[in-house]
Image (cartoon, rainbow over all chains, first blue to last red; front, side, top):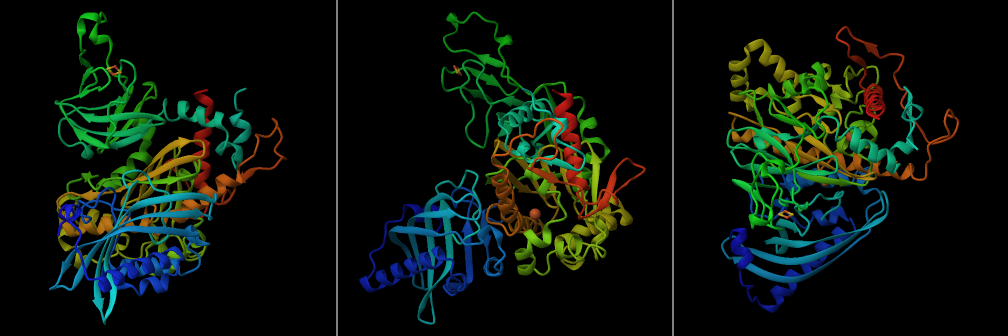
Length: 176
Length: 426
Ligand code: FES
Ligand SMILES: [Fe+2]
């Protein structure tokens, strides 16, 4: 499904246990990111992960235009390796963060691939303790693609469309 | 009271209040960013007639636009009637600019073409064009402007050193032309703008500030070119004059294409194309040397395959905006590789520059509360030491000054020119 189709998709009604499982995944992913628990967060990632924070809406080919983040699995592994060195100064110490995740909708189910495409809104509060200790607010929308790996949900895609995505961004060295 | 720049900028140290004093910032916006040459953009960003992008020159919003004849204009983004901002998007295309306040219409060259309800308007339209840069100049597609119009020639401003930096970059494209088509990423930093001409050309900080990147990316070319021990490293810090500086990494590359992180087997067609243009010997040289790492005063950073511009916002806040070069007549795969390389290096979520941004912000915090010392007194606090490598740097026959890559030759070069500009345009 294209980004535009997804944007107009009517949410799917899914059986309650599945809905709860998807919600639980999103909340866990958010909490691990908030608490900078990098290794545990990485365990939620599938081998074919695409982690994309576009400049503006996710309506362009990231191979042709720059993005804030456009990680395939190896690039994401490097990102996490860097964060775990303990000397990633832009996140040393890690920013205290909390994000509110809401408006969770299952937008598409692909039975053949076994994937769920899930949209949600978030507001992330970050205290940039590494420099001026200012509170920064990062609102946006996430489109996750989830897949079952060995019975457990994993994410193979996380697209983060920031409300402020066309404007200059402060340091974004944490997991957004 | 006017700021005593000569007392605050010595050859081997400068005073921290230069980064926090609002009067200094106001002076800079006038003397450096309005009355001097400033990088604005690249002609490949506006390939067709009517294409425009919005930029800032100093604190002024401008429109860089291509007219029907192909000429490039840098116009104030401010209606000549009562000052409404004309363009508020990043880019666009059109035949004219119409102001939505009272509907005045301006041509692509800034001339006033039509006034609505014109019976009540008794001025001559020819007297009312948009304000515009007094001078616009191009070098290899890089567009520079100055608003005042009395900054001398662009060729003089760039000098042989500045031109050579740009030439070495563009010569890496098989057509000799690069394209800036990948869009700009803005990185907001709560620091004075001068942290960046200093840090972008500082070869002394990598193993500390970028330790995490170096550990996470053991194959990064900075290991060979800027790290590796003071005596073993043969990269050079270069003062090209007029505030233009370079970390010359060429002597340290241990193989061709190290800067691209691949071997000839992966980019054979590209190597052949360069050879067809430049001949074998020069192509081999280019492929070995790669793009330069230099800073062109006051706001253009050439960071290997990246281009960054410094947009000051106020005395303690700025944007480090970057894009990546795209080469002409090469496989898409090569340009995509450049893009991926750029995303790893620059921008708010990249592996390198966020750590520089933290340093810049902490320096800015460190300079809070400093007052310029009483005249003649260098005993009071708040000074920044830039003496490193003074004894071993050497003036070359071509007029450049060259030190070890870790020396503060580049910082001294920036401040030397800064002081000259701030005093001579007082
Ligand atoms: S301000 Fe632009 S037409 Fe009046
Ligand atoms: Fe750096």
